[in-house]
Amino acid sequence: MRRLLLLPFTAFALSLVLWTAGLGAVQPEIPPIEVHQITDTLHMLGSGMETGGNIAVLVAESGVVLVDTKNEGYGPTILDLVRAITDKPVTMIINTHVHYDHSGANTEFPDTVQFVAHENIRRHWARTDCQPVPTNCDDFQGENRRYLPKTTFNDRLSLFAGTPDQIDLYYFGRGHTDGDTFVVFKDARTMHVGDMFLGKTLPFIDAENGNGGSAIEFGRTLTKVIDNIHDVDIIINGHWNTPLAWSDLVDYRGFYMDLYTQTRRSLDTGLSAEEAIAAYEKPAQYSEYSANKGAGPFTVDPIVNYIYRGI
Image (cartoon, rainbow, N blue to C red):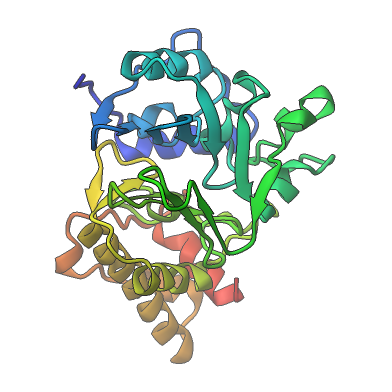
């Protein structure tokens, strides 16, 4: 397993802000990707804090299944890493949500690949008006509309059912976006959760860009996941550089719900949003989690403000 120095989350947050402002660009030399083996047939392509969302790689009987494709420009690198794992071709790509850092390389694969996504993801990508960012709508215009997912689902879809390659897709409602998909590799007891658990920090709620995120529904959606999905031990998250455990997901739900509960209490007692932000205190039990205050997508401030606005 290769190791590399990771950027702190503040740098990642800055990079997201720059992309959202339309200033981001693929650099000539892109950072490397770490490979983590989970089982004989399942790997995670990490370095998600630098390279775009983490990828799951399943070597199935019929070919390789990818979950997410990182930033634009990573297609050849991803294919090289897959070839180091298996000679089988990539035959399916599943996307966890609409954002460019999880789907940027979709169109760098052959259009014979079967693309699978929640119906809301496809709806966003199929738009002809691609503003505002950070959707990946621009990549699916003109001839590239052939890359729009042809396999979509509403709340649940099973792929390769009844085989060792079975993959179950779940949608439980709004959170990070309105298409967040939970991908369960049944035999591996592993679930890719996308940016519904991007790492040990507060989430980015995409509520301002037409992508349907909700600070109010985020915790409720995580609760539905925890209550309804069973027999999962390992979590592939959106951007944390190593796989985590199911217990980490449960803790993350608690971490978020504590902020939500404190905010609701402040709202109900008549405090302003600014006063609620100042009053929030992170419990000691979540000392490993970042809950900074101030401007930025992974801070207390936007979440509190969304809750106050009823979003």
